[in-house]
Image 1: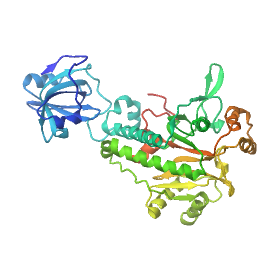
Image 2: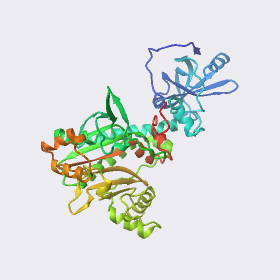
Image 3: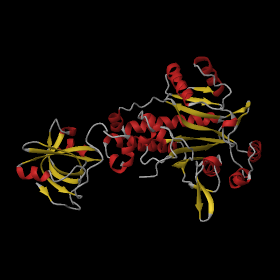
Length: 443
């Protein structure tokens, strides 16, 4: 039976995933019409909700004729008897259903959402994201992303961290004025925050251990499959560290916690995408920057010695080396040259030209940057003078260090990069709900 348009129901809703445990009972499901299959004397309606798919079977001329009036993606309510059916999603279906439309007839989506693969180009997906993301395979990375954030929070909460929320409009650049978006703030020049770096450091003086999940903005003219102008940063900062290795130890716990939570909360999404979760070693292998350069010079056709950073090709090679030599998909590269690190980075006391900092490589790409920070006020003044930068733009930040700050350090992990590597995505934009880059401001 097909009912006319309705706006609500007093019947308790069950989810599609619950149906196998409700055989023989009359229940109500609600969701989007994922697919309609019409045979000679029967119509199968497949509904999609947040838990999965549910199938309803309509028979009889009146019911089957009325069912054809609802286009795919129309929101429906179906009440019927749960019946075991091995060919149905989850092994159960609704029989003798009563169907009510909860929305008006839906316009056609930009491509068939019921197909197992996505028959559309990336620009088409991004242009129509509010509807395209309903496709289970396009939705799945964001389920994994959400589970990752939950794991990040759970782990740091368990380690005594306090979650903070810092401004995203700031008066000065965090690291370099060349890579910020300038905005008008009631007639005053301001900037979108490149990171919560200054705020999370100062909050170490309040809470000792802090973390934040939030957007950051980088006005970098990159037009690649691995860069975004806005992304979500998972930041942490902790006080009373001996050096950067204490930060690396916390990061290792975070990675293990994120992976565990993804496995627990997003197993279906991982299975749908064929995503293999990494094993996080008890001790992630590490290599000093100079030793990494020696390896690359010896075993590749390039000689990067003397360069202040690693090229993407070098990161890929080192990741392959770590997997081959240490059985790890993760690799810490430590001791980057001070010239390549922000002014607040603590130098290596034994090798002042190098830093107590690190990058974490994961599956061929730099995923995390972190390290120990300076914590003496005079050291900040010296660092800025050495770089030819005046301290005035940083006055508020620097004043914190006049009032006693412990040795501290932290890290920042890009959520979209993490999700893209977990899912082996070829473009980071598929791990981003609404990407913002050089060319895209909508939807």
